[in-house]
Structures are given as C-alpha cells and as structure tokens.
Length: 552
Image (tube, rainbow, N blue to C red; front, side, top):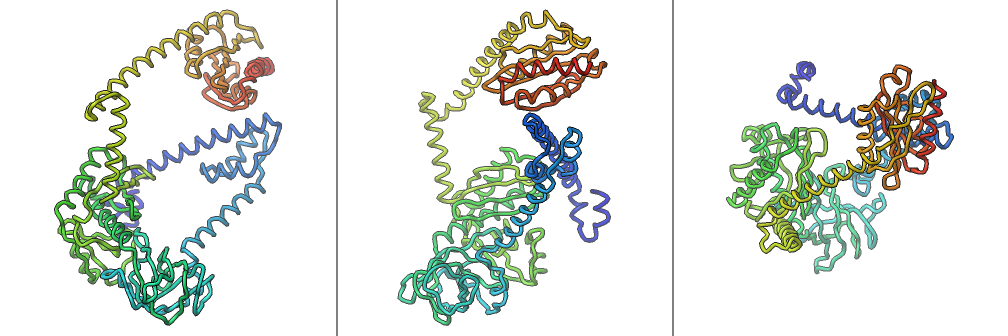
C-alpha cells in the first residue's frame, strides 16, 4: 500500500491519506480469501470421497465450476488435487458452465436499464425534456414528444406497455439511490390514460417514463402529468435522512467514513459506508440521537445550482467516484450538512418527525450497511417492538415490561446451570461407554489397534475418549465410530510409534470415511470425519484394519 501510494499520489492522494484503513481492508480480504479456499478444499474432499464411493473417475464440470465461481478455486488446482487422487476433471463441462455464466453476465448488463433504455432507438432521440418536479407535482400541459413500443417509434398507443418522453415532466427519474416517481398520465378532463411505474434517464438525458396504457396516447398532444404525492413525500423524507445519517456517521466515527452507496425507497432507506470493524451499539445510538436532534431542531432545507468550484469552497461533500458537470446542485440542511445532490427533499428537517435505525451489518471488507426508517414507518417499527416486548413479558408472567431484562438474565443463568449439569451427565455416560474399550487391543500389521463403535453424544465425546486413550497409552492406533441423529462420526488417533511407521491419521480417515458416505481430514496424530450413512460404521472399522495390514 505505501509503495503504490507513493507511485500514484499525484493522482490519488487518498491512498496515502487513508493508508492505515486501506491496509486493514486488504489484510482482511486476504484472510477472508484464505478462509474461502479452506472451504473449497473441504468441498473438494467431499466431492472426491463421493466419487470414489460411487466408483467414478471424473469430477463433473459443474462441480469444478462451483469451486471456481463460489470459492475462487482455480480449475488448475482442482486438476492437481484430482490427479493426486487418480481422478480427472470434466474440462468440457467446466467450459460449458463458464460460457453460460458469461452469457448470464452479458444479459444482466443488457437488461440493467429498464425496458432496454440504452437501445439504438432511444440513443437516436435528441428531443429535449425538462424536469419541473422541483416546484410542482402536477403538470397539466405536457406535450408528448416520443412513444416507444417494443423498441419501435410509434405515433400513438392504446394498450400494453410503452415508454414516453415529454417536453416537460414533474416525474423524478431514478438517480443517486433515489427511486423513481410513480403516478398517472391523464387527459385534460382528468381521465386516467396511463399509470407510470418507472422513470429512468434515456441515453441523451431525457426522463423516460415506463407506463401501462389504459387509453389512447398520441404524439404532439398535451397531457396532464400527475405524480403520486404520498410516494414522493415519503421518498423525499428518507432522502433527507440519508444526508443527516451521512453527516452523523462522520461526526461519530471520524472523517474516514464515506458513503459507499444508498437506496431511498418510500418505506425505508439503506445507506452503505466505509468503516473497518463493527459499529458498536453505543456509536449507533449516538448517530441516531444526532439525526433525531437535527430533526427536532427544525433546520431549513434549501437548494440551489452554482459553479462546481464555488460549491467546493462552501465545503459541499461530493461522493467519491461520482462525475459532476461545471454547474452542480447543492442541498443545505441548516448549517449542519451541505452536499452535492440531485434528489428531492422537504423544506424543513422537522418533516421527518422521527428517525430509527433498524439494522447495521457488514456487507464486505471495510463496508458497513445501515437500514433505517422515518416518520410513520419509524412509529410503526417502534410500536411493533413494544408489542413484541409486551408479548414476551406476558409469556414470562411479568406485570411490567421494564422487568423483562432481569427476568431473561435469570433464565439464562438457570439454563447455563442446567447445561452444565447435562454436560456432566454426558461426561459420565462417555466414561461408561469407555469402560473396557481400551482393554483388549488387536495386533494388526505389527501395531496395536483399537477399532470400536461406541454410543456417545457426538464428536466432542469421541475426542474426550481419544484423550483418555492417549493418557493410558492403550494402543498405537485408535479408530472410533458413533451414530448421532442419523449421521456417522468417525475419529482416528495415531501415536508416535505408528507415525514413525508411516501411518497418518488424516490419510487413514480419508480411506475409511467413504464407507459412511462422507469425508474428512486432520493432523497426522488425530483426524475426524462425518458421513450420512451410519450403517457403514462397522465397514469403516473393518476397512481401517485392512488398510493398516496392507500398508504394514
């Protein structure tokens, strides 16, 4: 990071300015990738075990692609693993899956703009269209300039789905995370002729309305465009909330925090931001309090257009990676927040009423996500929380909800005590199961072997038995199996004598695990496996004897 930062500092000074943060993110990504590779190895071992059990010699192309696509496992590495196990990879199938993935990606890119709004027909349309929605939600004399049906220009349309461009429109086109306006297109007498379900920017910047047609529409005619006022209001409130949240996060977490994406819907907002590590509940409460205080302070919200250099002098916050023209729109929330912005807002922060964070999570290395609600949805969210708390109090036979935390703490303590009792009983049962199993080791290939099926609670108890076996020095090799909830658990332990003779627990467990329909691995001295066929445990124990005698 410091080397790259020095090389590129003249163009990207942010690298050195945020060096520590970037280094942490990269280190975290490396660790996550190692974990992903480990998961890939586990899956590959399972695939190989299943193939061997079925007597097959080729890893299917779909499985090799899954390892590559989901776990970042290079197909060359899969090939090497396969060759070590005497198998091969269906490369033709792998390439077929890869080609299908590329087709899906191309299709996704092609469909990203709703209704093909990047097609050649739309790219050829240069008719200007003005957005009037800053000051009005109804425009009674909008002239219909363009009708597109199934990617073809039409003079009129009477049914189905169409895309329309008007000379002027109050409908906001989706941009900057804020969703599009919905509404109606009406005749001058108020008759509804079409429902507007989406608005996107056409290739040449016009607002492109996607509509379901209910009556005849003709180019050159004037229509009454009416935006759904409740949807616009709710979206605007949540958009303002993202500005307040953005500023509050920087106030609490530090200036390294920047917006990394947002979604502004009518009923909730989503805000992604850069921050390494989880945001604590205390910090979230601070952020929430700051946002609510700005709401209750009733700050005026104003906006105006100005040259970009003038906006920068005002300290307006620009989103990293966004492109801006020479003239920009600036939105100010009192003296608290000033940002470059093209979205809609109320005229005062008190319109939001209430702000409540509903979740905070990590969505990638160094990227966190907050979801929140405002106004009516915030009230409904808190009411639902209160209802759940009251229901919990009723179930716990408590008169007042304020006593719920202490009652839950008491129940957790009681549960912990009961779990401790159960663990003690399971240990006693494991000890009883162990009684006598170490007394009569077999002689196999010059080594002492104990291979038995036992009845214990699970793998943890098998490991406890292995510890006792090691302490007693009962044999050179230990192989144990148990059935738990319809699944098989196997454990192999090997002492130094057997290790020196060339036996490794990991190799032995891989040899016997297919008998129970599973796979596993581990260290040279201890390994474990799971499988879906507990009826195969006796066969696995027998296979262990065979493998040891053949190798000896």
